[in-house]
Image 1 (cartoon, rainbow, N blue to C red):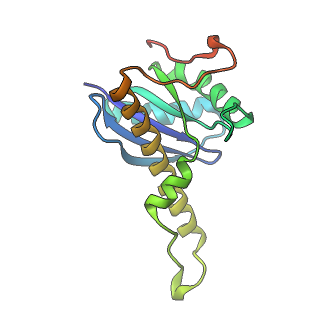
Image 2: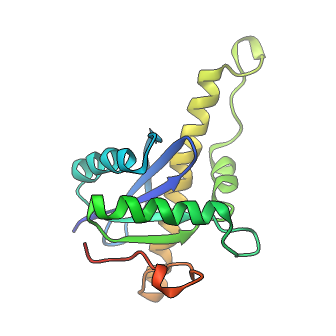
Length: 169
């Protein structure tokens, strides 16, 4: 059975997690740098898809606390609309509210720098990359758990039902 790739799309990085398609546990696997274009992001993701034998993506949709779609959610939908045809796999959007906060709780606080001082720039980047991977695992696990409970993929309602991005590639 093909694996499922969880994606936490950020402005600078993309956190990735993977799980077996039969509902296994989501495991954080990588963080990749955002490219200048969604097309370049798709090329980087396609490498991961091939390496990990992925058959589906679950992308976090950053809804507002109220559940409405704000500018970030619209940007994410536009990114998915560009990336999905290039990857050629089904994509499901998953509400990702508070996943970064939960990821930070799971990972714990950032380590102090040398001699107890402030963390270095590289330490901060490594910490943020770890948080992004963990957030991707939370997004993916939420989707897998919802499917196990109800049997159907979850896709947050769009302003228009025609915006649904799930396809059969």
